Length: 112
Image (tube, rainbow, N blue to C red; front, side, top):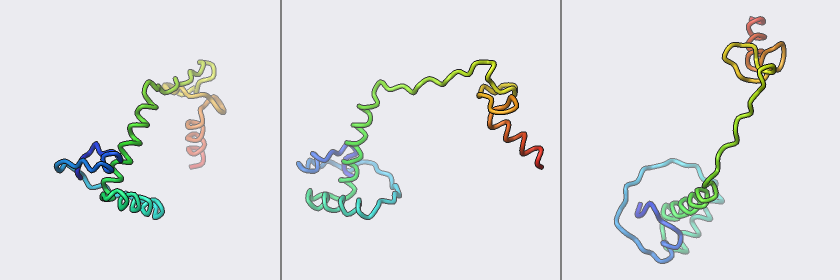
């Protein structure tokens, strides 16, 4: 692998540098995607590996910029009167004062 920060524009301008550290990654790629990667590589005079790295880098940059400042939504707080009666469980009750997990566990215990 030539450059871990490779972009498609770099392949077009062919600004190659020394060898970089790489790791082998076994990934299954659909045949139609591989054919498209092959076409891009041959048009640019680059290897398929270089094209894949360039595409991944550009996609990751886009994802990072779009996710900047994103925080996951807060967990919903279940009021005490609607919580499971099992000690330490904060999930909402579903049946007989138990959450779905504890209710199913109780049903399985009775069936066995």
